Structures are given as C-alpha cells and as structure tokens.
Image (cartoon, rainbow, N blue to C red; front, side):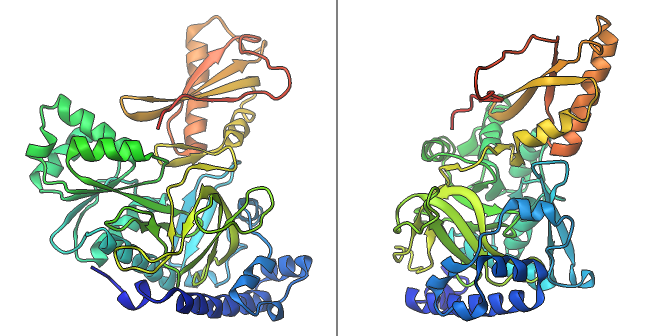
Length: 432
C-alpha cells in the first residue's frame, strides 16, 4: 500500500537527480537572499556555482544547534513573519529554547511525509489512532495527529498522562493504533495488568508508532510478544519539522522522503561520508522547507543508511535504528534535556553551590530524573520548612526551563563526591 507511489517507488538514480535540482535551487535562493547562509558559504569559500552534482553537497558548510540559539528567536527565518502560520519550541542547551517556524507549505510537506509513513506501516481508513504524544510546543502530538487524519484515520488526541483514562478510552473507542513513546507503551501495559485488563483479549490495538526516545530491538520484541501488536520506529526532530518517518511493514529501517529531506551519514571524526550500511552521524538537508531551511544540519544521532530497494517495493532510502548520539543529550519521556541546561538553571539560583549530580532511572516503566544539589554554606539551614521551600523553588525553575518534572534533593556543603580530572555529572542507569 502506497500513498505517493510515483515518489516512493522512483528509481534511486532519478531520486538523486530530483534531489540535486532541489538542492541547487535551495542553495541559490539562500545564497542570494539569506544573510546567515550567504555569510556562512562565503566563509567556507563556496558559492552556488560550485554545486554541479548531488555529491557537491559535501562542499557546503555544516549547520549546528548553536546557530539556532545564536539567532533566536527568528533570525534564521527566510520568510516574513506574516507567512509563518505556526511555531514549535524544543528544549535548548541554555535558557533559550530552539524555535522552529512553519509556513502553510511547510505544514503540507510535513503532513505529506507522515501520510506516506503511516500508509507504509498499514495505517489508514478504519483505524482509530490514539495520539499519546504531548500536544502544544512539542511537535510530536500535532505531527502525528495531522498525519493520521490525512490518511483517513480517526484521531483520539489523548496527549500525555492520566493513564487509567487512556486505557479506558482505548477499550471504549476500539483504538487500533497508538502513537507514543516506547516507555509509555510499556507503562500502559503494566497499568493495564494492575487494572485486570487482558491486553490481547480486551484491546483492539494492532499497531504502535513509537518514537521521541531511543529504544532497542529487544524492547520491540518484548512489546510485540506480550501485547500481540506490531511496533514501528517513528523518527523525527523539531529542527527538521517533527515526527516524519516510520518503518514500513517490513520493519527494516525508517523510509526517508528523499524529495523532502536529503540524508548524509558521516564519519563522526573525519566528517567524510561512510559507505551505505556503516554507522555514522546523520546530517540532513531539508530540501523544501520555506520558513527555516536547513542545510547540512548535524543531528548528532548515530545511525546507518540503506539505499537498496525495500521488500515492500519502496526505493526510498532507509535510516536504521538510532544507536546513540555524539553529544551529551538525555531524552526524558520524549523531552530533550542537556546537562548544560540544568547547570544554567541551577546557577541562576543564588543559594545553589558549585556541585550537582544528575541521576536518571527507569521506574514503573517511566523515565525519572533526580538532581542532587549542594547548597552554599550561608544558605544551608536546619529549618526543614526553609529547605523545603528552596527545594520547591529549584524544582519549579527546572520544570520551567526543561519542560519536564525533576526531583531535587538538597545536599549540605561538601556532601557530593569530588572527582580527579573530569567531573562526572550524569549517572544514567536505564537499560533499553
């Protein structure tokens, strides 16, 4: 089953020619009309005249998350504000978030990509899709929502939380597909057993579209065996648009819409392209974004690229499961969190000392994060009510900046461990 067979089954050589034409147009436009890209290309000694094949994309300079922070809120945009119809925001590594804008055309391409993806894993008319990603500034909920509606499915916008109510709705409305994080699906399964719900007998669920956090093949097997459903990897980031690509029913990598996004896999040390099938850092160029184009954006995700035709009949490239990252980002219940974000927030509280530790665990199938914080000697108090008030204040500040709840534990001066050499700030004990 195909949504757009002309593109999805296009011979790979023809796809590369299409990508080259789109890239040439994009580079010409940005060099001519965008100050950021013009200056970045000039610094790299490259101009549109140097782009004479798709392989010449390697001549173009990289783009980094720091560029988005340095140009916050909208200095990266390439259209007037009155053409931006939506903003989405994700966590940044400092006090400022990453802001992404969308034109009407951007939303249409995003929805088109998800329609192809959902169709490829067998979602369509007659399905009831429960979207249990967060709605709002996070891209997950609305992205999955519009993609499911596009293919003719019925959407239940459940968002996150209220697990008992989610399970009741799944039963009452005959939900057949759920889109959520893998850890939340595990949590739903645990909660269902406690409520006396037999998943295979009492649910009509047949598919799960799982993303926003890393998960393993062993977790997929466990979920499929215990729940009797098929689980598909859903990939996307706020910078590229949001959730965009899923595996097809063959479950051998997420199909990339090559006419919308160009993917390179590069050696993390040399920056050179690796052979198909070899692991490296994913670098993406958004060929058709209007509000905020991205050229050679370093995703920091480690994966592989398969350019051979898939057994499903699609010829589009496929990315493998994300195996790690080249930076220190943590993913907590689908939210990107950087240790530097936490440090930035803590250092704005005068009572906080210089030592802190992050502990990440998985309890009751959900990710939890605790931050231990040393208090300055002059601020430390034996009065429980004073310490409770300070702890609550720090927790509120962290939630405001991170958009995820964090447990804070206050420590007396000198109580946290010191390290010779590089300080260890994060202890992540989750097992995928």
